Amino acid sequence: MGIEQIYTEVLREHTNSKHNKHHIISPTAKLSGVNPSCGDEIELELRLQNGIIEDAGYTGKGCAISQASASIMIDLIKGKPVEEAMKLAETFFGMIKHEITEDEKLEVLEDAVALKDIAHMPARVKCAVLSWHTLKECVEQSEEK
Ligand SMILES: [Zn+2]
Image 1 (cartoon, helix red, strand yellow):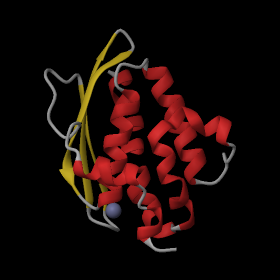
Image 2 (tube, protein in one colour; image 1 turned 30 degrees about the vertical axis):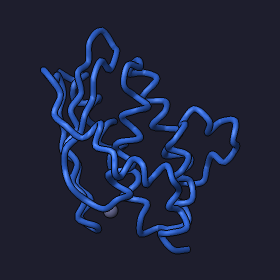
Image 3 (cartoon, protein in one colour; image 1 turned 135 degrees about the vertical axis):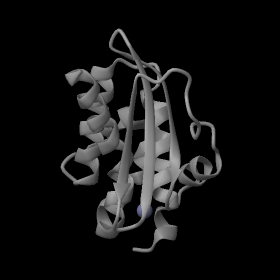
Image 4 (spheres, helix red, strand yellow; image 1 turned 90 degrees about the vertical axis):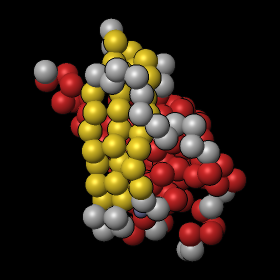
C-alpha cells in the first residue's frame, strides 16, 4: 500500500493547516518526541489546569503523517479532561495496532480515523503514534511533579 492511498483529504488539510503549530501561552508541561527512523521531531506544549487541557500546541518538523497526526490530536484533546485525552490515546494506539477495529469504538477519534490504514504500513506507524506517545509521556511527567 502506498502513502497516496491513505492520503485522505483530512490528512492533507491538517498537513497544510498550521492552526495548531505554534507555541502556547504559559505552558505547564512540555515534551519533545523523536522518531529517529523517519527523522520526525515534535515538541508538544500543554497548559493543564484542574485536570483539563486548556490549551495545546506543537512545533517541530517531520513527514506529513507525523505533522498531520499531531495537528489532529491537538484538535481532539484541546479543552478535554486529561483523563479523557488518555483514553483517546489508548483508543488511537488500539486502532493503529489493529486491536480496535469497530467503527463505533473508533468514532471518538474523529479525524484521527483517517490514519487507520497506517496499521498496514509498519514503516509509518511510528510517524502516526509519535505525537500520541509524546502526549502520554508529557502528562505522566507532569503528574509526577
Ligand atoms: Zn515520519
